[in-house]
Every structure is written in C-alpha cells, then in structure tokens.
Image (cartoon, rainbow, N blue to C red; front, top):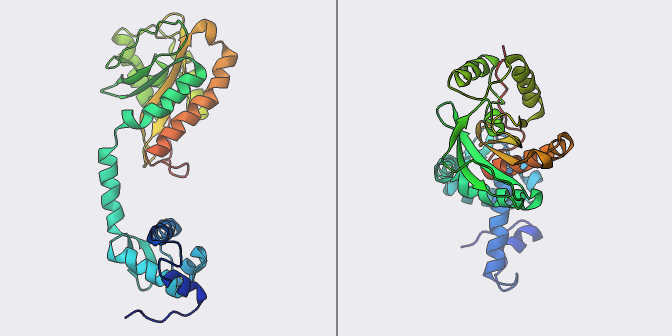
Length: 280
C-alpha cells in the first residue's frame, strides 16, 4: 500500500503516469533528480534537512529518493553524518577508467582543433622516458610533418614531450635532459632549456621552437585524468612560416582549452590537481 504524502509536492511526485504525460516523462524526471542528488553530496556527507534544501524538495520526497539510491549502492547513510556517495560509484569509476580509450575520447576534440587551426594535431603519452605518438590528424596546409603514429621522440626536444613534463621536478628534468643529449637528441643549451621549461610549467603549455625538426614549430598542452595526473598531451604543429611568435601565443589558449576538454572527458575537473612537485 502506498503511504500518504505530506503535501502537494509529494503528491505530484506520486501522481499516476497519465497525469504527468506518460511513464517516460515521470521516469526521466526521477532519473534527473537522482543524478542531481549525487551531485549535491559530492563534496561530503549531507544531512537530510540540508539535502532537502539543496534539492528544493520536501524531506519526505528527498528521503524516498535517497533510499532508492541507497538500495542500489549509489548512496550510503551514516546516522551521525548523513548521506554520502556509495560503493557502487567507486566500482563504476574504476570500470569507466579501465574502459577509457584515450585515443577514442580525444579524437573528436583533436579533429575539431585541426579543422579550426588547419594544422597538424598530435596526441601522445609518456613511454619509458620518451614521447609516444598515439594519434595524428594532418592539417589542411601543404606542410609535411615527419611524425608517425607509434613514433617515440625525445621528451626534452618536442613540444609534446615538454608538455608531459610540466609537473616534473627540476631534478627529473635534469636527468632527462642529460639522457636525451647523450642519446642523440638535437643539441640544446641547458640553461636556455631550463629557463623555458620553468616558463612552460607556469603557463601550462609548451613550445617546440624548431628544436626537434627544422622549420617545424608546435604548441602543446597536457591532458589530465580524474586524479589530476598528466596522462597525455596534445600539440598543434606547422611550418615555421605559419607559426610566428604571435600566432603561437594566440594558439596557446586554444590548445590548452582543448586539452582541458579532453581532460574533462576523462573525469578531471579544475579543482582536482595535485600540487606540483618541488622543482629543486
């Protein structure tokens, strides 16, 4: 038997489907409210009165909806603390992360960036102290970029590689710089390279100023996962004639924005970023 409701709002929630325009409408509203409730407790335990206020629902309606989420493991209730996220979300989070294909997730964003800039867009990740190129979308300009999917390039001479290192310590930078130079990376002045890297770390993007390939320049930015860790980077590359200093500066914001969009697709949010390790 259905229990009595305390007011008109609760009664509206319990109204027959025909009154509300069909079961699909009612089901959709319930689903949206359930998802909204998960958002309301994302910052920590919330007691019933506060949750009711945040949801703009009566206590009885809030309690009923919360109980449905508890039954399915999406919420947990602690008598002294209130409602908080449940174990089902942890399970789903791990499954979503394990199933996430970063190439597939990033591809639409990369295609859009390539179309807007008319330049070549790369996606890469760290692979044993090298930058591994995972995807490449050619630009519309008649510019030959020698990179190929599956290529591994030095971290310290490529824009993509430097973007992957932005959160690193200077001790790590030094080790990689010395190793790359010893293994045949394009010759570079250590002090100049370090000064640029410090600027890139502060700005959140990196440049390749014809360091890895003659007459080719690029702008790159890191991609982060749900924990805030850098898991990949994207870059826009073109001939130096299309990439003067002014255009590279203009492109920086666009590349960072696209990298942040991909990061968001991976579960990252601007509030979740681990503190940068000590540079010294």
